[in-house]
Image 1 (cartoon, one colour):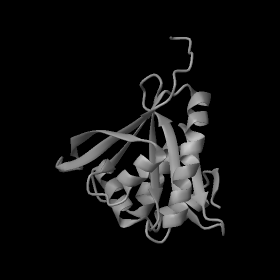
Image 2 (tube, helix red, strand yellow; image 1 turned 90 degrees about the vertical axis):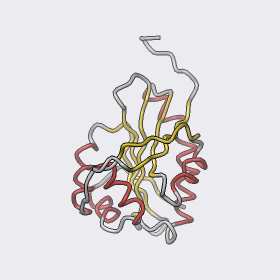
Image 3 (tube, helix red, strand yellow; image 1 turned 180 degrees about the vertical axis):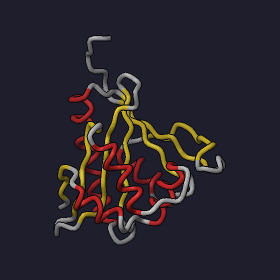
Image 4 (cartoon, helix red, strand yellow; image 1 turned 180 degrees about the horizontal axis):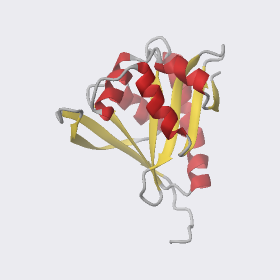
Length: 170
């Protein structure tokens, strides 16, 4: 059984040093330029304090294999999810367990933070991310172009909705 623990630099750097090649490419496209594992770790670490949820995920044996974050987008009630992992083939079973964990815990995370919509994107050429997102409960909404430093990369936009939670603005 996997373990979801609060983000720590030590666990996260172990993930970033050995990112799955498709996750590495996707992160570089989002960033707009090639990036080392340390560059990507620094980006994630800098954003960590503003996240609603920021976890390092370990195998049952204690090997860090993924990082997961949920953060506000700046739009009321809307958050974005991000997940980066090590080799998807090697960690296939732990990633499947992680999808089940996220699907079970996401409603609580959202309720606690007043989130009604969670968005996630993945590169259209990523071989496993679309299936993982669907397994978590996301639905594909659109194909969006204009990504990457060159502007020629496309991403799938996924989202999942949760029942409305009363808020002062409603």
